Length: 138
Image 1 (cartoon, rainbow, N blue to C red):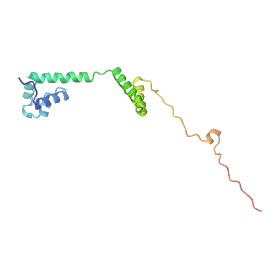
Image 2 (tube, rainbow, N blue to C red; image 1 turned 90 degrees about the vertical axis):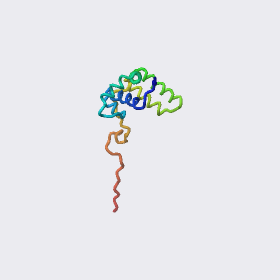
Image 3 (cartoon, rainbow, N blue to C red; image 1 turned 120 degrees about the vertical axis):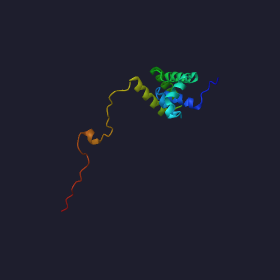
Image 4 (cartoon, one colour; image 1 turned 30 degrees about the horizontal axis):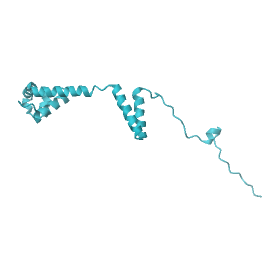
């Protein structure tokens, strides 16, 4: 018995998973005749090798989406340490910023600081520009 899927069977499995179990769409996407899609999907779903492939893909999808928040934080921290070790400080800073967001340490409200301070503002007057003096000629 041949345990390998044909190309059409593999495409059917991929499309079946992608379309959330819609066998009709999967059969048509795999290149089978549209008129016999219902019959063909039943035939395919009865094959052991097709069911095994669908189960394999479902298990893979479950594992791929099962990463926890702690694992994400751990991997991000490892990337941060690696960037620091390689003296890639901009990258390290970006990763650290993302970690603070994930962990909830980033301040909710930020204050804007006005760095454009002029002498006039410091002295509390409107204008300190010297005025031209008038010279009178007799």
